[in-house]
Image (cartoon, rainbow, N blue to C red; front, side, top):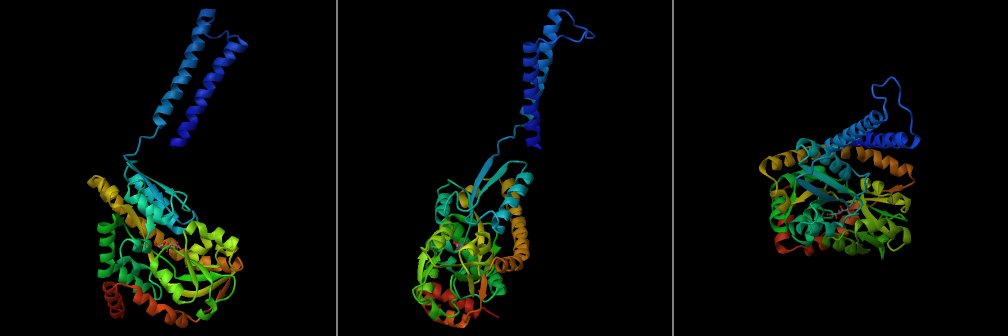
Length: 369
Ligand code: CS2
């Protein structure tokens, strides 16, 4: 609407100027039927018309100028604009702006164009930007979040839901907020992570020396080292080019990520390791959240809840479709010996945890039905 008003205003102004130019340059004779026919009236009439048109234009521009938001939030995303997280944040931005009557505006930036994930966390903490999606990357700050992406721990989405909604999940959220200054405002379920490569890797013995990119998360490095590969931590936005140039040979991510980031163009196989069942958190800086007045806090959290539901629906609709699309794009799906993969690295992962986190690990296993 505002855009239309703006365009209309510009046209009005343009017409006004043209009118003025034409009248003065071509010296067009006035219609004799008009009440003003003397040169004096002609000139006054002309000026009056022009001023009127210009005035209307300015009024419309004035009306169309958007009021400044009270809170302009910058949100950095590692995923591309085709991914459901980004689409969910676009939806969030839209409903939040509507419901807050323009008082909060969210600007989304995809593909790490604003910052890489780890930098985005630091920039949020410094108050330079405001939002992102993150999870186990916060393991560089606090131990407990390792469990939201620990390889070969959770079996399925039921295990995942129990963990998120149980006491350990609550502890994760509290520690994120209180110890890192990053407030989770919901969670997005993810599909299992699988290993992509240019040769089939059905058994961990096939991994010897394989250079595999992992996110900068300690448990990923431990797992892939124990599996015999050479894990290389790298920002997500560098993965495509590094695969293309051969700096790395493999990477691991859920189907949706492989599709949205075009990895099928540079990788031939998806080895169905399913080694991580995980989720991520849409987050805002705690300081930024506390700066909202009470009414906006409520509107913000409600919109966040709706964003989570919206993303979940997108995720469900997407999960099967992207697999078909990846096959259609030429990727070959390889069944792997998942047990051999898990058995080869589980102990190393466990040993890499602090004694306190080993207790949490045991608690998660014991709480399984
Ligand atoms: C992504 C991330 O970088 C990646 O491969 O899949 O979401 C990763 O899982 C996160 O960095 C964890 O916070």
